[in-house]
Image 1: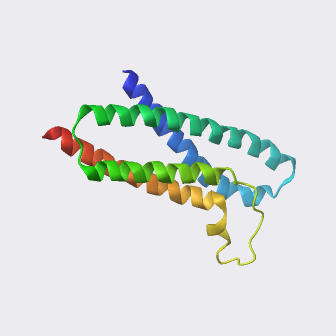
Image 2: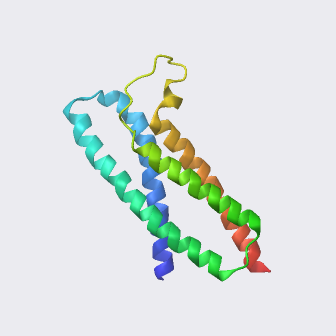
Length: 142
């Protein structure tokens, strides 16, 4: 039961990170600064900070549980390392969210914003999580 709660917390943190950041990308142009943007940005940034703590704690618990339950192939460890590295990059990128106001090249402006990188990293991390789950389930079958 406790492990199910940890999985749920990890999944909810992912939803806040990726879904919340995507929503921020969609809503930000309409807010254009001012008091509404300031009131909205503060709680969102705090949710991201809380999400980091939840990700680190629950991720460590889940990884320890899986590594202790089955003999996993080296590809699992490599993908887990890649997932952790991308997660660290995403957390680092979050420090700059909302701080870059514009880009001289409008064709690339959206991809240079930290919010867009966070969504891309979040999707990549989710893909790695699916691969890890598949490898783990295959390993425990045998």
